[in-house]
Length: 583
Image 1 (cartoon, one colour):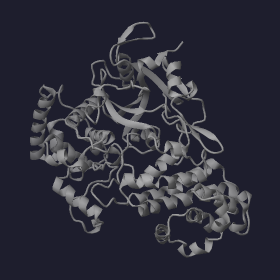
Image 2 (cartoon, helix red, strand yellow; image 1 turned 60 degrees about the horizontal axis):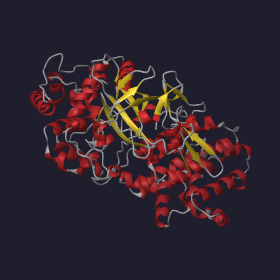
Image 3 (cartoon, helix red, strand yellow; image 1 turned 120 degrees about the horizontal axis):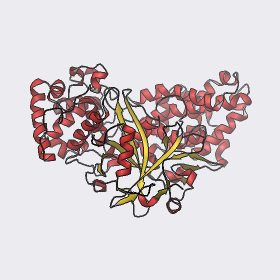
Image 4 (cartoon, one colour; image 1 turned 90 degrees about the vertical axis):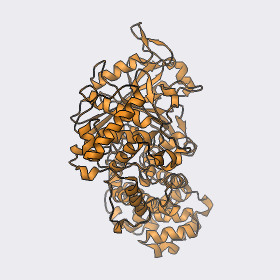
Protein backbone atom coordinates (compact mmCIF):
# COMPACT_ATOMS: atom_id res chain seq x y z
CA UNK A 1 0.00 0.00 0.00
CA UNK A 2 1.29 3.46 -0.83
CA UNK A 3 0.17 7.04 -0.36
CA UNK A 4 -3.00 8.33 1.24
CA UNK A 5 -5.12 9.51 -1.69
CA UNK A 6 -7.61 7.62 -3.79
CA UNK A 7 -6.10 6.04 -6.89
CA UNK A 8 -6.39 8.40 -9.85
CA UNK A 9 -6.28 5.68 -12.49
CA UNK A 10 -8.47 2.97 -10.98
CA UNK A 11 -11.21 5.25 -9.75
CA UNK A 12 -11.01 8.14 -12.19
CA UNK A 13 -14.42 9.59 -13.04
CA UNK A 14 -13.52 11.18 -16.36
CA UNK A 15 -14.18 9.31 -19.64
CA UNK A 16 -11.33 7.08 -20.77
CA UNK A 17 -9.08 8.52 -23.47
CA UNK A 18 -7.70 6.37 -26.32
CA UNK A 19 -4.77 8.08 -28.01
CA UNK A 20 -2.71 7.09 -31.04
CA UNK A 21 -3.57 6.24 -34.64
CA UNK A 22 -5.42 2.96 -33.99
CA UNK A 23 -8.65 1.80 -32.38
CA UNK A 24 -10.10 -1.60 -31.47
CA UNK A 25 -12.27 -3.07 -34.22
CA UNK A 26 -16.00 -3.61 -33.75
CA UNK A 27 -15.47 -7.36 -34.14
CA UNK A 28 -12.86 -7.45 -31.38
CA UNK A 29 -15.05 -5.37 -29.05
CA UNK A 30 -17.89 -7.82 -29.63
CA UNK A 31 -15.61 -10.76 -28.98
CA UNK A 32 -14.41 -9.25 -25.69
CA UNK A 33 -17.96 -8.29 -24.74
CA UNK A 34 -17.15 -4.67 -23.94
CA UNK A 35 -18.25 -1.27 -25.21
CA UNK A 36 -15.65 0.86 -26.99
CA UNK A 37 -15.62 3.53 -24.30
CA UNK A 38 -15.05 0.88 -21.60
CA UNK A 39 -12.23 -1.14 -23.15
CA UNK A 40 -9.59 -1.77 -20.49
CA UNK A 41 -12.06 -1.32 -17.62
CA UNK A 42 -14.21 -3.58 -15.45
CA UNK A 43 -17.78 -3.29 -14.20
CA UNK A 44 -18.22 -4.61 -10.64
CA UNK A 45 -21.78 -5.77 -10.04
CA UNK A 46 -23.14 -5.45 -6.49
CA UNK A 47 -26.63 -6.31 -5.26
CA UNK A 48 -27.77 -2.70 -5.42
CA UNK A 49 -25.49 -1.04 -7.99
CA UNK A 50 -22.69 -1.40 -10.53
CA UNK A 51 -19.49 0.66 -10.62
CA UNK A 52 -16.59 0.81 -13.03
CA UNK A 53 -12.86 0.34 -12.37
CA UNK A 54 -10.17 1.31 -14.91
CA UNK A 55 -8.00 -1.62 -13.94
CA UNK A 56 -6.03 -2.16 -17.18
CA UNK A 57 -5.57 1.51 -18.06
CA UNK A 58 -2.74 3.93 -17.24
CA UNK A 59 -1.90 7.59 -17.17
CA UNK A 60 -1.10 9.01 -20.60
CA UNK A 61 1.43 11.73 -21.43
CA UNK A 62 -1.29 14.39 -21.27
CA UNK A 63 -2.23 13.36 -17.72
CA UNK A 64 -5.51 11.74 -18.78
CA UNK A 65 -6.30 8.08 -18.12
CA UNK A 66 -6.80 5.57 -20.92
CA UNK A 67 -4.81 3.51 -23.43
CA UNK A 68 -2.73 3.90 -26.59
CA UNK A 69 -2.98 0.98 -29.04
CA UNK A 70 -0.12 -0.27 -31.24
CA UNK A 71 -0.63 -3.23 -33.64
CA UNK A 72 1.90 -6.02 -34.25
CA UNK A 73 1.92 -8.93 -36.66
CA UNK A 74 3.82 -12.03 -35.61
CA UNK A 75 3.90 -13.46 -39.13
CA UNK A 76 4.02 -10.62 -41.62
CA UNK A 77 3.57 -6.95 -42.26
CA UNK A 78 1.09 -4.27 -41.22
CA UNK A 79 -0.34 -1.52 -43.34
CA UNK A 80 0.23 1.74 -41.50
CA UNK A 81 -2.16 4.67 -41.37
CA UNK A 82 -0.14 6.21 -44.20
CA UNK A 83 -0.89 3.19 -46.38
CA UNK A 84 2.70 1.94 -46.33
CA UNK A 85 3.73 -1.58 -45.30
CA UNK A 86 5.66 -2.00 -42.03
CA UNK A 87 7.21 -5.22 -40.79
CA UNK A 88 5.63 -7.00 -37.84
CA UNK A 89 6.90 -4.97 -34.86
CA UNK A 90 8.24 -1.91 -36.65
CA UNK A 91 5.44 0.40 -35.49
CA UNK A 92 5.93 -0.71 -31.89
CA UNK A 93 9.73 -0.37 -31.97
CA UNK A 94 9.57 3.10 -33.50
CA UNK A 95 7.04 4.24 -30.92
CA UNK A 96 9.10 2.83 -28.02
CA UNK A 97 12.34 4.43 -29.24
CA UNK A 98 10.62 7.79 -29.53
CA UNK A 99 9.34 7.53 -25.97
CA UNK A 100 12.77 6.44 -24.72
CA UNK A 101 14.55 9.08 -26.80
CA UNK A 102 17.09 6.55 -28.07
CA UNK A 103 18.47 6.02 -31.54
CA UNK A 104 17.51 3.37 -34.11
CA UNK A 105 20.59 1.25 -33.33
CA UNK A 106 20.51 1.58 -29.53
CA UNK A 107 19.60 -1.43 -27.36
CA UNK A 108 15.89 -1.70 -26.53
CA UNK A 109 14.46 -3.26 -23.38
CA UNK A 110 10.96 -2.95 -21.88
CA UNK A 111 8.62 -4.69 -19.47
CA UNK A 112 5.44 -6.25 -20.87
CA UNK A 113 2.47 -7.52 -18.87
CA UNK A 114 -0.53 -9.33 -20.29
CA UNK A 115 -4.16 -8.43 -19.65
CA UNK A 116 -7.57 -10.08 -20.03
CA UNK A 117 -10.01 -7.52 -21.44
CA UNK A 118 -12.74 -10.18 -21.60
CA UNK A 119 -12.91 -10.19 -17.79
CA UNK A 120 -14.87 -6.97 -17.65
CA UNK A 121 -18.23 -7.61 -15.94
CA UNK A 122 -19.01 -9.77 -12.92
CA UNK A 123 -19.75 -9.88 -9.22
CA UNK A 124 -16.95 -9.99 -6.67
CA UNK A 125 -17.80 -13.63 -5.98
CA UNK A 126 -17.71 -14.34 -9.71
CA UNK A 127 -14.34 -12.68 -10.14
CA UNK A 128 -12.88 -14.51 -7.12
CA UNK A 129 -12.37 -17.66 -9.21
CA UNK A 130 -10.74 -15.84 -12.14
CA UNK A 131 -7.47 -14.05 -12.85
CA UNK A 132 -8.98 -10.92 -11.30
CA UNK A 133 -7.39 -12.09 -8.05
CA UNK A 134 -4.25 -10.64 -9.64
CA UNK A 135 -6.01 -7.77 -11.44
CA UNK A 136 -6.53 -9.90 -14.53
CA UNK A 137 -2.81 -9.73 -15.30
CA UNK A 138 -1.40 -13.19 -15.84
CA UNK A 139 2.12 -12.81 -17.22
CA UNK A 140 5.07 -10.46 -16.82
CA UNK A 141 7.79 -10.68 -19.45
CA UNK A 142 10.22 -8.39 -21.22
CA UNK A 143 10.67 -7.15 -24.77
CA UNK A 144 14.01 -6.97 -26.58
CA UNK A 145 12.80 -5.33 -29.80
CA UNK A 146 12.20 -6.76 -33.30
CA UNK A 147 9.37 -8.93 -32.01
CA UNK A 148 11.52 -10.88 -29.52
CA UNK A 149 10.37 -11.41 -25.93
CA UNK A 150 11.93 -13.02 -22.85
CA UNK A 151 9.88 -15.02 -20.38
CA UNK A 152 9.73 -17.63 -17.69
CA UNK A 153 9.04 -20.36 -18.81
CA UNK A 154 11.75 -19.60 -21.38
CA UNK A 155 9.75 -20.76 -24.41
CA UNK A 156 6.49 -19.08 -23.35
CA UNK A 157 4.87 -17.48 -26.41
CA UNK A 158 7.74 -19.01 -28.39
CA UNK A 159 9.75 -15.88 -27.46
CA UNK A 160 7.34 -13.74 -29.52
CA UNK A 161 4.59 -11.30 -28.49
CA UNK A 162 1.96 -14.00 -28.15
CA UNK A 163 -0.87 -11.49 -28.44
CA UNK A 164 -3.05 -13.62 -30.72
CA UNK A 165 -5.14 -16.14 -28.81
CA UNK A 166 -7.41 -18.89 -30.14
CA UNK A 167 -10.54 -17.38 -28.52
CA UNK A 168 -9.60 -13.93 -27.32
CA UNK A 169 -6.53 -11.93 -28.14
CA UNK A 170 -4.02 -11.65 -25.33
CA UNK A 171 -3.00 -7.97 -25.33
CA UNK A 172 -0.12 -6.67 -23.29
CA UNK A 173 0.72 -3.31 -21.81
CA UNK A 174 4.29 -2.12 -22.37
CA UNK A 175 6.30 -0.28 -19.71
CA UNK A 176 9.56 1.66 -19.77
CA UNK A 177 11.93 1.55 -16.80
CA UNK A 178 14.58 4.24 -16.34
CA UNK A 179 16.88 5.41 -13.54
CA UNK A 180 17.97 8.85 -12.35
CA UNK A 181 21.12 10.10 -14.05
CA UNK A 182 21.51 6.98 -16.20
CA UNK A 183 21.70 6.95 -19.99
CA UNK A 184 18.65 5.01 -21.21
CA UNK A 185 20.50 3.07 -23.91
CA UNK A 186 23.19 2.08 -21.42
CA UNK A 187 20.61 0.93 -18.90
CA UNK A 188 18.74 -1.00 -21.59
CA UNK A 189 21.97 -2.77 -22.52
CA UNK A 190 22.67 -3.74 -18.92
CA UNK A 191 19.14 -5.10 -18.57
CA UNK A 192 19.59 -7.15 -21.75
CA UNK A 193 22.85 -8.65 -20.49
CA UNK A 194 21.36 -9.53 -17.12
CA UNK A 195 18.12 -10.86 -18.58
CA UNK A 196 19.80 -13.06 -21.19
CA UNK A 197 22.08 -14.70 -18.63
CA UNK A 198 19.32 -15.30 -16.08
CA UNK A 199 16.87 -16.48 -18.73
CA UNK A 200 19.31 -19.10 -19.99
CA UNK A 201 17.91 -22.34 -18.58
CA UNK A 202 15.45 -20.61 -16.26
CA UNK A 203 13.55 -23.03 -14.02
CA UNK A 204 9.78 -22.46 -13.80
CA UNK A 205 7.94 -23.91 -10.77
CA UNK A 206 5.19 -26.46 -11.30
CA UNK A 207 2.62 -24.36 -9.42
CA UNK A 208 3.66 -20.75 -9.73
CA UNK A 209 0.65 -19.40 -7.80
CA UNK A 210 1.94 -21.21 -4.73
CA UNK A 211 5.63 -20.77 -5.35
CA UNK A 212 8.09 -19.36 -2.85
CA UNK A 213 9.96 -16.18 -3.70
CA UNK A 214 13.30 -15.87 -1.93
CA UNK A 215 15.12 -13.11 -3.85
CA UNK A 216 13.56 -10.17 -2.04
CA UNK A 217 16.73 -8.27 -1.05
CA UNK A 218 19.81 -7.13 -2.92
CA UNK A 219 22.16 -9.51 -1.09
CA UNK A 220 20.16 -12.58 -2.13
CA UNK A 221 19.66 -11.30 -5.70
CA UNK A 222 23.39 -10.77 -6.20
CA UNK A 223 24.09 -14.22 -4.77
CA UNK A 224 21.49 -15.71 -7.12
CA UNK A 225 23.05 -14.02 -10.17
CA UNK A 226 26.56 -15.22 -9.36
CA UNK A 227 25.47 -18.74 -8.51
CA UNK A 228 23.18 -18.98 -11.54
CA UNK A 229 25.97 -18.08 -13.95
CA UNK A 230 28.34 -20.42 -12.12
CA UNK A 231 25.66 -23.14 -12.41
CA UNK A 232 25.38 -23.99 -8.74
CA UNK A 233 23.39 -27.16 -8.29
CA UNK A 234 20.91 -25.90 -5.67
CA UNK A 235 19.41 -23.35 -8.09
CA UNK A 236 18.71 -26.06 -10.65
CA UNK A 237 17.35 -28.75 -8.30
CA UNK A 238 15.64 -27.04 -5.33
CA UNK A 239 12.12 -25.92 -6.41
CA UNK A 240 12.04 -23.18 -3.75
CA UNK A 241 14.62 -21.30 -5.85
CA UNK A 242 12.74 -21.65 -9.15
CA UNK A 243 11.36 -18.43 -10.61
CA UNK A 244 7.94 -17.89 -12.16
CA UNK A 245 7.55 -14.98 -14.59
CA UNK A 246 7.29 -12.06 -12.15
CA UNK A 247 9.87 -13.46 -9.74
CA UNK A 248 12.30 -13.93 -12.63
CA UNK A 249 11.95 -10.35 -13.87
CA UNK A 250 12.09 -8.96 -10.33
CA UNK A 251 15.51 -10.56 -9.87
CA UNK A 252 16.61 -9.29 -13.30
CA UNK A 253 15.58 -5.77 -12.30
CA UNK A 254 17.46 -5.65 -9.00
CA UNK A 255 20.64 -7.09 -10.54
CA UNK A 256 20.50 -4.88 -13.64
CA UNK A 257 20.05 -1.71 -11.58
CA UNK A 258 22.96 -2.56 -9.29
CA UNK A 259 25.61 -4.38 -11.32
CA UNK A 260 27.12 -2.66 -14.36
CA UNK A 261 28.87 -5.29 -16.44
CA UNK A 262 32.54 -4.35 -16.17
CA UNK A 263 35.42 -5.79 -14.17
CA UNK A 264 35.66 -2.89 -11.72
CA UNK A 265 31.97 -3.13 -10.77
CA UNK A 266 32.15 -6.90 -10.34
CA UNK A 267 35.16 -6.45 -8.05
CA UNK A 268 33.35 -3.80 -5.99
CA UNK A 269 30.33 -6.04 -5.49
CA UNK A 270 31.89 -9.50 -5.20
CA UNK A 271 35.35 -8.66 -3.82
CA UNK A 272 38.59 -8.04 -5.68
CA UNK A 273 39.71 -11.63 -6.26
CA UNK A 274 36.32 -13.33 -6.42
CA UNK A 275 34.82 -10.49 -8.44
CA UNK A 276 37.57 -10.54 -11.04
CA UNK A 277 37.35 -14.33 -11.35
CA UNK A 278 33.57 -14.15 -11.61
CA UNK A 279 33.85 -11.51 -14.32
CA UNK A 280 36.09 -13.82 -16.34
CA UNK A 281 33.59 -16.63 -15.84
CA UNK A 282 30.76 -14.32 -16.96
CA UNK A 283 32.64 -13.46 -20.15
CA UNK A 284 33.15 -17.15 -20.92
CA UNK A 285 29.51 -17.93 -20.24
CA UNK A 286 28.40 -15.02 -22.41
CA UNK A 287 30.30 -16.46 -25.35
CA UNK A 288 28.66 -19.86 -24.79
CA UNK A 289 25.24 -18.20 -24.72
CA UNK A 290 25.53 -15.52 -27.41
CA UNK A 291 28.15 -17.00 -29.72
CA UNK A 292 30.22 -13.85 -29.55
CA UNK A 293 32.87 -12.52 -27.19
CA UNK A 294 32.06 -10.04 -24.47
CA UNK A 295 34.77 -7.49 -25.22
CA UNK A 296 36.13 -5.29 -22.45
CA UNK A 297 35.82 -1.92 -24.15
CA UNK A 298 33.31 0.85 -24.65
CA UNK A 299 31.27 -1.28 -27.05
CA UNK A 300 30.90 -4.35 -24.84
CA UNK A 301 30.86 -3.21 -21.23
CA UNK A 302 28.26 -1.16 -19.42
CA UNK A 303 29.16 1.52 -16.91
CA UNK A 304 26.95 3.81 -14.80
CA UNK A 305 26.38 4.72 -11.17
CA UNK A 306 24.52 1.71 -9.73
CA UNK A 307 21.45 2.01 -7.56
CA UNK A 308 23.25 0.93 -4.39
CA UNK A 309 25.66 3.86 -4.71
CA UNK A 310 22.80 6.27 -5.36
CA UNK A 311 21.38 5.16 -2.01
CA UNK A 312 24.69 5.73 -0.24
CA UNK A 313 25.25 2.05 0.57
CA UNK A 314 28.63 0.36 0.91
CA UNK A 315 30.04 -2.84 -0.60
CA UNK A 316 29.93 -4.40 2.86
CA UNK A 317 26.18 -3.72 3.11
CA UNK A 318 25.29 -5.13 -0.31
CA UNK A 319 27.69 -8.09 -0.03
CA UNK A 320 26.17 -11.13 -1.74
CA UNK A 321 25.37 -14.05 0.54
CA UNK A 322 27.08 -17.37 0.24
CA UNK A 323 24.48 -20.12 0.20
CA UNK A 324 25.68 -21.22 3.65
CA UNK A 325 25.18 -17.70 5.02
CA UNK A 326 21.76 -17.46 3.42
CA UNK A 327 20.63 -20.80 4.83
CA UNK A 328 21.74 -19.85 8.33
CA UNK A 329 19.94 -16.52 8.17
CA UNK A 330 16.76 -17.92 6.62
CA UNK A 331 16.58 -20.73 9.16
CA UNK A 332 16.92 -18.30 12.05
CA UNK A 333 14.26 -16.05 10.51
CA UNK A 334 11.74 -18.83 10.07
CA UNK A 335 12.39 -20.20 13.55
CA UNK A 336 11.94 -16.77 15.14
CA UNK A 337 15.53 -16.65 16.38
CA UNK A 338 16.80 -13.49 14.69
CA UNK A 339 17.13 -11.71 18.04
CA UNK A 340 20.04 -14.00 18.91
CA UNK A 341 21.33 -14.53 15.37
CA UNK A 342 24.90 -13.24 14.90
CA UNK A 343 25.48 -14.16 11.26
CA UNK A 344 25.31 -11.99 8.15
CA UNK A 345 21.95 -10.30 7.54
CA UNK A 346 20.58 -8.81 4.32
CA UNK A 347 19.40 -5.28 3.77
CA UNK A 348 15.68 -4.56 3.83
CA UNK A 349 13.74 -5.66 0.73
CA UNK A 350 13.22 -2.01 -0.24
CA UNK A 351 16.90 -1.02 -0.14
CA UNK A 352 18.58 -0.89 -3.58
CA UNK A 353 15.87 -3.05 -5.17
CA UNK A 354 13.45 -2.00 -7.88
CA UNK A 355 10.56 -2.71 -5.55
CA UNK A 356 9.85 -4.69 -2.42
CA UNK A 357 7.62 -7.77 -2.24
CA UNK A 358 3.96 -7.84 -1.32
CA UNK A 359 3.20 -9.08 2.17
CA UNK A 360 -0.06 -10.63 3.38
CA UNK A 361 -1.58 -7.25 4.25
CA UNK A 362 -0.70 -5.90 0.79
CA UNK A 363 -2.33 -8.86 -0.94
CA UNK A 364 -5.49 -8.29 1.10
CA UNK A 365 -5.71 -4.55 0.64
CA UNK A 366 -4.62 -4.30 -3.00
CA UNK A 367 -7.54 -6.46 -4.17
CA UNK A 368 -9.94 -4.52 -1.99
CA UNK A 369 -8.60 -1.17 -3.21
CA UNK A 370 -9.08 -2.22 -6.83
CA UNK A 371 -12.43 -4.01 -6.76
CA UNK A 372 -14.10 -3.53 -3.36
CA UNK A 373 -13.17 0.07 -2.74
CA UNK A 374 -14.34 1.87 0.41
CA UNK A 375 -16.10 4.61 -1.59
CA UNK A 376 -17.43 2.75 -4.65
CA UNK A 377 -18.29 -0.60 -3.08
CA UNK A 378 -18.82 0.62 0.47
CA UNK A 379 -17.26 -0.28 3.81
CA UNK A 380 -19.40 -3.38 4.41
CA UNK A 381 -18.53 -4.87 1.01
CA UNK A 382 -14.85 -4.08 1.64
CA UNK A 383 -14.92 -5.92 4.96
CA UNK A 384 -16.85 -8.89 3.58
CA UNK A 385 -14.38 -9.17 0.70
CA UNK A 386 -11.43 -9.20 3.08
CA UNK A 387 -12.88 -12.11 5.02
CA UNK A 388 -13.84 -13.98 1.86
CA UNK A 389 -10.19 -13.70 0.78
CA UNK A 390 -8.90 -15.59 3.82
CA UNK A 391 -8.55 -19.05 2.27
CA UNK A 392 -6.77 -17.79 -0.81
CA UNK A 393 -4.23 -15.65 1.05
CA UNK A 394 -3.44 -18.32 3.66
CA UNK A 395 -2.78 -20.84 0.91
CA UNK A 396 -0.81 -18.37 -1.19
CA UNK A 397 1.33 -16.98 1.60
CA UNK A 398 1.80 -20.22 3.50
CA UNK A 399 0.50 -18.69 6.75
CA UNK A 400 -2.16 -19.93 9.16
CA UNK A 401 -5.74 -18.64 9.45
CA UNK A 402 -4.72 -17.22 12.84
CA UNK A 403 -1.99 -15.11 11.24
CA UNK A 404 -4.41 -13.92 8.57
CA UNK A 405 -7.00 -12.91 11.16
CA UNK A 406 -4.41 -11.05 13.23
CA UNK A 407 -3.61 -9.05 10.09
CA UNK A 408 -7.16 -8.65 8.79
CA UNK A 409 -9.12 -7.80 11.95
CA UNK A 410 -7.42 -4.42 12.57
CA UNK A 411 -8.08 -3.54 8.92
CA UNK A 412 -11.78 -4.34 9.38
CA UNK A 413 -12.17 -2.18 12.46
CA UNK A 414 -10.31 0.73 10.84
CA UNK A 415 -12.55 0.58 7.76
CA UNK A 416 -15.66 0.62 9.93
CA UNK A 417 -14.44 3.50 12.08
CA UNK A 418 -13.95 5.53 8.89
CA UNK A 419 -17.47 4.53 7.84
CA UNK A 420 -18.87 5.69 11.18
CA UNK A 421 -17.14 9.05 10.81
CA UNK A 422 -19.23 9.61 7.67
CA UNK A 423 -22.62 8.37 8.84
CA UNK A 424 -22.85 8.07 12.63
CA UNK A 425 -22.91 11.81 13.49
CA UNK A 426 -26.12 12.15 11.50
CA UNK A 427 -27.83 9.54 13.69
CA UNK A 428 -26.28 9.89 17.13
CA UNK A 429 -27.45 8.53 20.43
CA UNK A 430 -26.16 8.55 23.94
CA UNK A 431 -25.47 4.84 23.62
CA UNK A 432 -24.16 3.26 20.43
CA UNK A 433 -26.49 0.27 20.73
CA UNK A 434 -29.50 2.61 20.71
CA UNK A 435 -28.37 4.23 17.47
CA UNK A 436 -30.07 3.30 14.20
CA UNK A 437 -26.66 3.69 12.53
CA UNK A 438 -24.99 1.12 14.76
CA UNK A 439 -27.80 -1.44 14.63
CA UNK A 440 -28.24 -1.19 10.87
CA UNK A 441 -24.49 -1.34 10.27
CA UNK A 442 -24.15 -4.40 12.48
CA UNK A 443 -26.96 -6.07 10.53
CA UNK A 444 -25.27 -5.21 7.23
CA UNK A 445 -21.95 -6.65 8.39
CA UNK A 446 -23.65 -9.75 9.79
CA UNK A 447 -25.28 -10.46 6.42
CA UNK A 448 -22.07 -9.57 4.59
CA UNK A 449 -20.14 -12.13 6.61
CA UNK A 450 -22.65 -14.83 5.71
CA UNK A 451 -25.28 -14.54 8.43
CA UNK A 452 -29.02 -14.98 7.89
CA UNK A 453 -31.49 -12.15 8.36
CA UNK A 454 -33.72 -14.14 10.70
CA UNK A 455 -30.79 -14.72 13.08
CA UNK A 456 -29.96 -11.04 13.54
CA UNK A 457 -31.89 -10.52 16.85
CA UNK A 458 -30.02 -13.35 18.55
CA UNK A 459 -26.71 -12.12 17.14
CA UNK A 460 -27.30 -8.64 18.57
CA UNK A 461 -27.85 -10.14 22.03
CA UNK A 462 -24.51 -11.96 22.04
CA UNK A 463 -22.46 -8.85 22.88
CA UNK A 464 -21.79 -9.75 26.55
CA UNK A 465 -20.02 -12.93 25.45
CA UNK A 466 -17.28 -10.90 23.78
CA UNK A 467 -16.73 -8.04 26.22
CA UNK A 468 -13.97 -9.87 28.07
CA UNK A 469 -11.85 -9.68 24.89
CA UNK A 470 -11.80 -5.88 24.89
CA UNK A 471 -8.33 -4.86 23.68
CA UNK A 472 -7.21 -8.49 23.39
CA UNK A 473 -6.98 -9.23 19.66
CA UNK A 474 -4.92 -12.40 20.06
CA UNK A 475 -7.30 -13.77 22.67
CA UNK A 476 -10.29 -12.95 20.50
CA UNK A 477 -8.75 -14.57 17.41
CA UNK A 478 -8.07 -17.73 19.42
CA UNK A 479 -11.69 -17.63 20.60
CA UNK A 480 -12.83 -17.33 16.97
CA UNK A 481 -10.83 -20.30 15.83
CA UNK A 482 -11.96 -22.45 18.75
CA UNK A 483 -15.64 -21.63 18.19
CA UNK A 484 -15.71 -21.27 14.39
CA UNK A 485 -15.48 -17.91 12.70
CA UNK A 486 -19.15 -16.92 12.99
CA UNK A 487 -20.69 -13.81 11.37
CA UNK A 488 -21.72 -12.23 14.67
CA UNK A 489 -18.18 -12.52 16.01
CA UNK A 490 -16.73 -10.78 12.96
CA UNK A 491 -19.40 -8.08 12.97
CA UNK A 492 -18.83 -7.42 16.67
CA UNK A 493 -15.07 -7.01 16.26
CA UNK A 494 -15.39 -4.96 13.06
CA UNK A 495 -17.31 -2.36 15.06
CA UNK A 496 -14.91 -2.43 18.02
CA UNK A 497 -13.32 0.95 17.34
CA UNK A 498 -16.74 2.44 16.61
CA UNK A 499 -17.95 1.41 20.07
CA UNK A 500 -14.75 2.46 21.78
CA UNK A 501 -14.71 5.89 20.13
CA UNK A 502 -18.47 6.46 19.94
CA UNK A 503 -18.59 9.67 21.96
CA UNK A 504 -15.79 11.27 19.96
CA UNK A 505 -17.24 10.14 16.62
CA UNK A 506 -20.73 11.54 17.17
CA UNK A 507 -19.39 14.80 18.60
CA UNK A 508 -17.81 15.71 15.27
CA UNK A 509 -19.50 16.84 12.03
CA UNK A 510 -20.09 14.20 9.36
CA UNK A 511 -16.83 13.59 7.53
CA UNK A 512 -16.83 13.62 3.74
CA UNK A 513 -16.12 10.18 2.18
CA UNK A 514 -12.81 11.22 0.53
CA UNK A 515 -11.57 12.62 3.85
CA UNK A 516 -12.63 9.48 5.69
CA UNK A 517 -10.84 7.40 3.06
CA UNK A 518 -7.61 9.31 3.61
CA UNK A 519 -7.96 8.99 7.38
CA UNK A 520 -8.51 5.24 6.98
CA UNK A 521 -5.41 4.67 4.84
CA UNK A 522 -3.21 6.67 7.21
CA UNK A 523 -4.64 4.83 10.23
CA UNK A 524 -3.84 1.50 8.59
CA UNK A 525 -0.13 2.16 8.16
CA UNK A 526 0.88 0.65 11.53
CA UNK A 527 -1.14 -2.46 10.67
CA UNK A 528 0.77 -2.87 7.42
CA UNK A 529 4.10 -2.41 9.14
CA UNK A 530 3.19 -5.01 11.77
CA UNK A 531 2.05 -7.43 9.06
CA UNK A 532 5.52 -7.38 7.55
CA UNK A 533 6.80 -9.17 10.63
CA UNK A 534 4.69 -12.27 9.94
CA UNK A 535 6.99 -15.14 8.99
CA UNK A 536 6.07 -18.16 6.89
CA UNK A 537 7.27 -21.04 9.09
CA UNK A 538 8.33 -23.53 6.41
CA UNK A 539 10.70 -23.41 3.46
CA UNK A 540 7.81 -23.68 0.99
CA UNK A 541 5.71 -21.05 2.76
CA UNK A 542 5.30 -18.00 0.57
CA UNK A 543 5.34 -14.93 2.85
CA UNK A 544 6.87 -12.79 0.08
CA UNK A 545 4.78 -12.27 -3.03
CA UNK A 546 5.55 -10.63 -6.37
CA UNK A 547 2.63 -11.25 -8.76
CA UNK A 548 2.58 -10.50 -12.51
CA UNK A 549 0.46 -7.44 -11.71
CA UNK A 550 3.17 -5.90 -9.51
CA UNK A 551 4.54 -3.57 -12.19
CA UNK A 552 1.09 -2.36 -13.21
CA UNK A 553 0.29 -1.60 -9.58
CA UNK A 554 3.56 0.34 -9.37
CA UNK A 555 2.84 2.14 -12.63
CA UNK A 556 -0.56 3.42 -11.45
CA UNK A 557 0.62 4.29 -7.94
CA UNK A 558 -0.91 1.39 -5.99
CA UNK A 559 2.44 0.01 -4.83
CA UNK A 560 5.78 1.60 -3.92
CA UNK A 561 8.91 1.47 -6.07
CA UNK A 562 12.43 2.69 -5.52
CA UNK A 563 12.56 6.49 -5.54
CA UNK A 564 15.50 6.53 -8.00
CA UNK A 565 13.69 4.73 -10.81
CA UNK A 566 10.77 5.60 -13.04
CA UNK A 567 8.29 3.07 -14.46
CA UNK A 568 5.75 4.24 -17.02
CA UNK A 569 3.30 2.26 -19.14
CA UNK A 570 3.28 3.82 -22.61
CA UNK A 571 1.07 1.66 -24.83
CA UNK A 572 -1.02 -1.48 -25.27
CA UNK A 573 0.16 -4.01 -27.86
CA UNK A 574 -2.56 -5.93 -29.70
CA UNK A 575 -2.70 -8.32 -32.63
CA UNK A 576 -3.10 -6.41 -35.91
CA UNK A 577 -6.40 -8.16 -36.65
CA UNK A 578 -7.96 -6.53 -33.58
CA UNK A 579 -6.97 -2.96 -34.45
CA UNK A 580 -7.75 -0.62 -37.33
CA UNK A 581 -6.68 2.92 -38.24
CA UNK A 582 -8.91 5.57 -36.78
CA UNK A 583 -11.19 7.14 -39.34
